[in-house]
Image 1 (tube, rainbow, N blue to C red):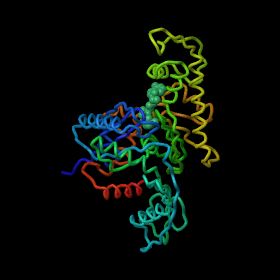
Image 2: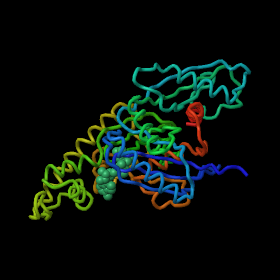
Image 3: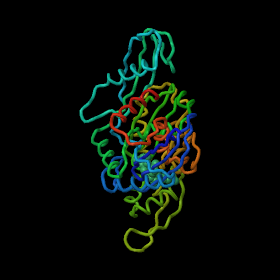
Image 4: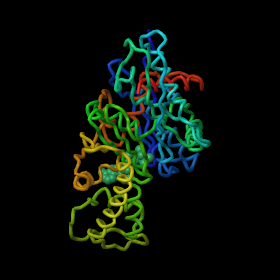
Length: 399
Ligand SMILES: Nc1ncnc2c1ncn2[C@@H]1O[C@H](COP(=O)(O)OP(=O)(O)OP(=O)(O)O)[C@@H](O)[C@H]1O
Ligand SMILES: [Mg+2]
């Protein structure tokens, strides 16, 4: 009997590590057999800062997902996050030896385009993403296999990341007893979990608003056009509230979740316990909201700085889709709609079966996307680095 193509996906976020065990189906659905999240300390802005503590959280999350699924998977596809990630374009053409496009020609042109991207010291390739094929000068060919032609050209994006960051992620994974066989940029994974094909076609901005980072991706014409990461997320609002209102972080977080709302213009006071002792502190709601508004304003400007690098005369036809826990901040959606004059919606992972309640929440989009991106590879047995490279190449042909 054929082995079930089970996948272990892991997202080491700034505030939580999530792990998912999924079963891939040929028609593209993902059945979630196990899913878990463990709070983590020791991450900052998407990067590993305390190896032991992060490894413990990974171990706990993976163990719980495995025991829920009745599996013991160790080979994992992992999300890679942080503002060190960048997208470098490359393109190359090949002459078609047989006069007809074969799958290996598509692979060859894609590989050659990726090789055109110069290697920078201290950085390495994370993923090769194909963004377009032309056949004899005709651009935008989706599936050229079988076409009669003389020449084919591929355009790619190579996602590169800082070697130190990647090594440290691999190190914590190994310490946690798992084997990272595949790395996928978190922002892209999240977008792929929630965006529909037609949104990617007509143009869409996706924001994964996490605790320490915001991943930005733009799709148009069915392909990824931009990927960037802003090193700010929901944790910055909590930190500002803690300092600005003189309350401990746990209180600041609670105030944010329960009361904060962007642009609400409410009046009145809140009563909370002060940092020292048991005395009660009175906080004007207006003060709380001004702190939140200032940080949201700064965050929005940083996102706009990225979006201004994209050339599009009419903006994204399908608007903006947000995921990540930070996207749940009350009033954020309408504040952005007012600011950008584009429709904004909250995204949830699609194409799921099984334990889908948790996995459909916006904070799990990255781990679902990692599983979906890697589902055809059946990450189930011990692998070697050569296998990893093969998977990376393989992925490049399918994205
Ligand atoms: N209802 C809510 N309202 C406002 N903020 C929320 C809400 N729920 C969660 N958050 C915030 O979402 C953030 C965590 O989001 P998420 O789990 O997506 O981050 P992460 O993946 O751990 O971090 P990152 O992606 O930056 O590495 C926290 O700052 C949390 O306070
Ligand atoms: Mg995240």
